[in-house]
Image (cartoon, rainbow, N blue to C red; front, side, top):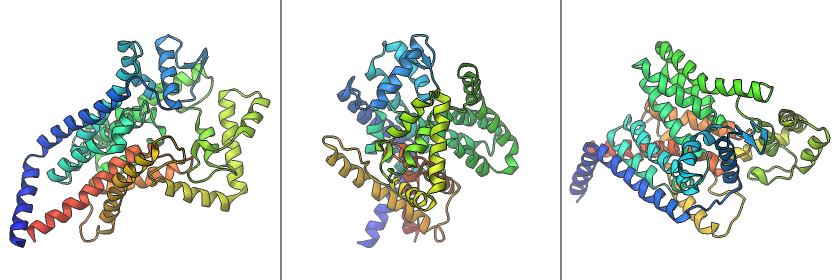
Length: 405
């Protein structure tokens, strides 16, 4: 019986290995079915306030008012996502369902690039990652929201895959760097991951590193010029760093409070000082830093709590029907997280591949960085794909060892 089971396991492993690309293509179809179908159900419904904000910024671009709220130019939100929505808005006349398809398309791209990255571990890993990515509930849900996290996931995977290719052929550093640049103006917190990628490319490929960094600087550099001309200040990406830092670092903040914290007193003081957008950003940042330096022990404990909340299955904000979705989130996330942690624990017995190491350090870097501000489950979406790659790596290395034992 054991021999029969081993033989069947080997046959399945070999089948997955030889048909990994076909399985990845099938997974693309699955992602279209799940996310696209959910998008059809939602139609033109907008569920969250941030969706209205991104839609308003896109409408401003369509109307020729530039990147603005009303008649006032702004740099409050990173511009990458509204820029991506703009073509779909122009084509559809502002139809929300059509713009929702951007997230679905990015999920499709994430399935493919997740496959490519995991294929570096083994063809079986590539096939499994593609399927899990396509069916992962949080990805399907996020892909249908007007949020930048799914495009950020797609850009992150492109940056990593093309960057690793640049180790052998420097020309791949160009699309990797351009992906990194657009990622920076979409979700700025992932910008330091570019430096991590440069380390993994290695000093021997320093031409590729130079090209990567130059290409990555082009798009953010142009946006900095826009901000200098329009806003009259040096603003690397956006002016919401101050408020985000304050939301995560004040006397009322908790590890999971996020935007639910009452900062009305700070807002009132900023109004009394008659500050502009840039001045408000600095004021909020100064207030947060002042609280941290005055309360180091409390701030340290809060930081640890925010790090822990990165691995939660639910945020404190409650909506109707969230109980069922919380259960689904927990059942889908924690087994993957456990397998990913197991991959690290077994690293002496099963040495980590380069892709494994890159995923581990990218997750650690971004978890620690996100906790400086505040954490939300949706902020973690791009990191979940890297966690899936690690989890599948655990399964594959164990399976491969068992079948040849």
